[in-house]
Length: 193
Image (cartoon, rainbow, N blue to C red; front, side, top):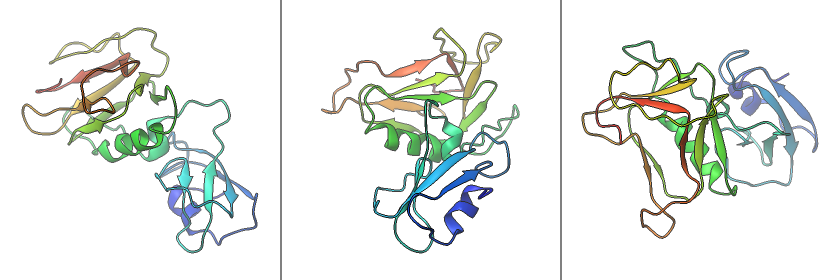
């Protein structure tokens, strides 16, 4: 067992095909857990969640996704909004989008009960990427202090007034999308669009 993401990166490069279990991204049970298999021939881009480069040496640790849906916590999202503050989860959301660019119809889970925070916008310049609330079948967008009773996941804007949380652009630079967006994730804060 590698323990955390930092510990996985610090491991001595093993033989090809060795598998290590990650008990959590930062700490055991934080939603970032999973198994990784070392691929000595890989030079895939490290996007901080599914493909991981070791600190020293070549090759890559590749997350064994099996039938699991990608979760923003795989990329280190804390989702610890407490009503007045929280750790900026923008880097994790942005890394998930980078990974999703290569996956047709990618759906990235925001964990049930999570309250994530974005201090800067996540630009999604790819078609057909959606953030999905784990376990919520409908779609709901909140603009302001509405109740989140029917939401299973929330994202709070921690940036300045009139900012964008998520900004989708089609691959050709236009604004026409197919299949992308939010499903069951409630958005809160000034300037949400």
